[in-house]
Length: 96
Image (tube, rainbow, N blue to C red; front, side, top):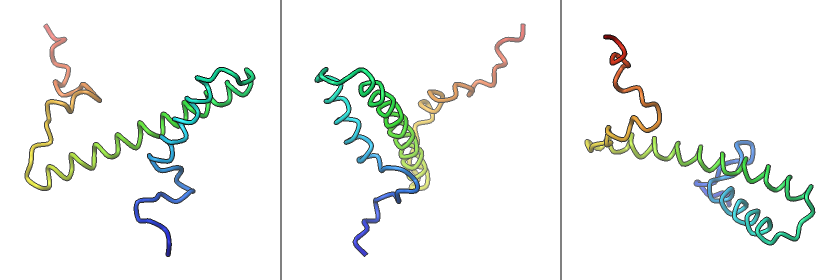
């Protein structure tokens, strides 16, 4: 009963906020420079995984925002849509 609706179950990994907070702690530890090499490498690996989690969750949020804008009758800014795939042209320019 105490679970917040915004929380993601552990089976699906950390929430964006959890991943970002852990990533910030890792950066602080690595910036300190007083860790053994092996521990630094392990923290770096964990940090890269957390950065991917954050990127993925931000991409999901962007899709949800675009869908909400479209369903509300707004413009989802299609000019930005080619940033991810870049295949809006169809590739017909190669023919001569």
